[in-house]
Image (cartoon, rainbow, N blue to C red; front, side):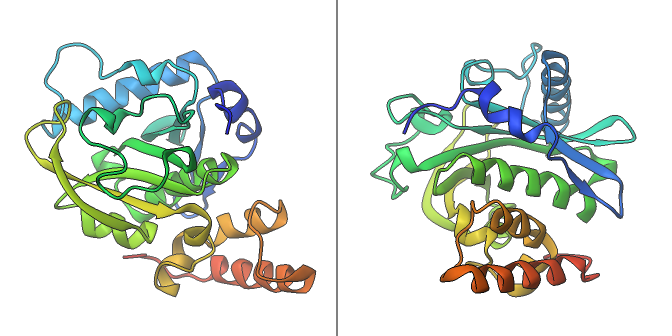
Length: 252
């Protein structure tokens, strides 16, 4: 599969924004260099606050500026409150985690079928379900339109159970110390993009509260394929629309 440039990958998402109605949080791909700098500044500040970045320079690496880096921000009232990065790389290109592990040895899916999620962060005062929903839905949509089958990421022991639950992910069991992120141990995990968005890898209430609106977009654009035929597609869309309208609140 060919490399997807950041510009080409981001373009269809600029006007496909993910809004959390309750909290008025709007998540989308950064549309220009200024917004990317804003995202990196937020990331640097938040990672410093929790002791994951001690360098005096901005928290930026070569992956941030190379083709295939997609920077996602969550804005509320024109203020950036959260951010994440998705890397869509060619199989022969290095991913961030390659320096810490052997891809095949730890049980990750084939690298040509993967995207990598990292640098997920939210301002403390904005850490509520509305912000998380909005940001995660845009991450999921970015992964879906990449055409890759899996997402890979790492998480600390404290956050690993939450990520496994909300992404419908599996832990590889491989722990390592990420030299850029402080002394805490991290564990590699992976998840099926399409199966998660369709709700096949998690409890129904988690899917309904978090991923159902992404499923509606996926079925309508045929990026998600139901098991059989147009009738099944219509039922899937109706089911996802109904689920996304329910006032389910928390998704834990």
